[in-house]
Length: 213
Image 1: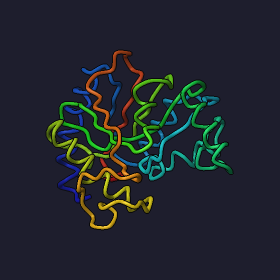
Image 2: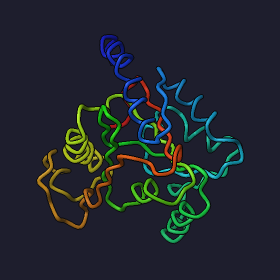
Image 3: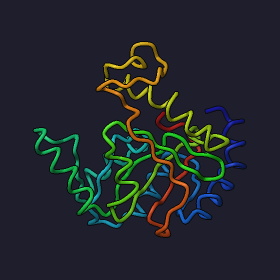
């Protein structure tokens, strides 16, 4: 990220934080990946049961490695040896999890969060289940409006994620969304989070870095 972008983000970031706080979402703005990692570990007490979706942003700041090596019970679905074990771990997310870690596919300047999902594990956990949801969000995810956040989720993040997972979809082949209805479709459920009824359940660390996609 260029320094001029960082300067602009320092002006915009606190406004986004205020907008999120007004929506009962606990938010803060930090400068670096290292700051984000420190803040995340401050938020989650040692001994917590923690899990995550396929969240690149948390990997990028070193949070997943820190959880695996720290004093936490980490429900690691990616470490499951069988499909059955993975399914059992995913079930525990909704009953045992103190903190579920994820990111956003898009976020508007006025604090509306948009996520798009194939299997719905992320959007389900965000909507209901875990006691807390901790979101690591790079400023590259912040766009002007709710409509822009939706477009970013569907037309930017989703086609990139199909490349990541190697799915059999047109967007994986052509690099753009054609609004498919195929078995491997990654745009099955779309969640718009405009307010948290439970104050502080959703926590956002907004980072002045490019994180995820």
